[in-house]
Image 1 (tube, rainbow, N blue to C red):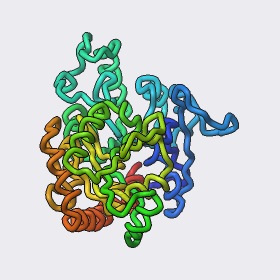
Image 2: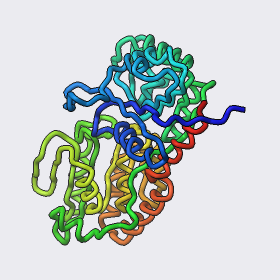
Image 3: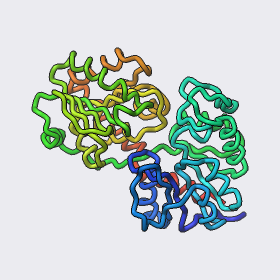
Image 4: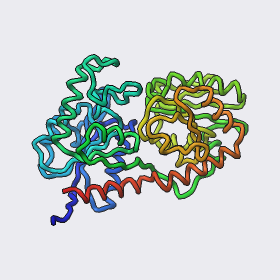
Length: 372
């Protein structure tokens, strides 16, 4: 029997989008794999408008990834702007491939999250309700190419794995939850609040997503309405909305553009509750990072979020679109700081035991070791 072989230089490929979860996971693995004796090579594409160092040797087009990689090398793909082109370019290779699915685009004709649409189960229709061009052809080509390539498909959530197994019945599907950094102990909340400029009586509600109020799948267009109703119930409330394209303060509502991870960690440690309404999600890093900061979350029970948030133990889950229910839970946590603190501590303990970046890296190394 051949012994499993783990390549010394696996190639990790993903979109260049520093604000996205897929890029963050790819970057984390790139930094942690050397601890396991691996020296990964990271390549990436560029989204429209992204700024990069032109001297960076990792830049490549989707269709050229296969040609620029040794035919026997391990390729680990986290994202692309062109699934058909990338998969066609990988076709001549004989080496192993791993694809981590950070959304549903590999099982649809371009849609990140089908939500109410069920057409993906049999193949997207030509007349896509959301207007994706040639959705039927794209969907069919992607499925044919994936079945021919026969990669190991990794899903961060059981929710997504169930969908993927329905489409790719003959392929290996693994569940490897996302992981983030968890400190050895929680830092001082009082110091974080002081550094964030909060008054002693302020009760902070945090909303955050890539795109801010413009984040469609995160219900960004509902944030202000939710905030106004919470503010009416809790006059001491202060709102932070992070991730949009402007910096602005209106009374007790502060809007921030994208911030670095250190600043976000500060906001999360200073906040009293993370409000995370949404229509769809996979295994969001935002929720995991809130847990790492000891911050309880009130989130819509969509996608893989119920695998992160245990309702009434380390946060609250609400039915998607049920604003009254979400407002009620946010207000409860603001008005009951002892309960919020207890839930936050539970979130930290729960997350640290299941969703650390070290555990995630070990899971991927074990996967690599089993590849032929």
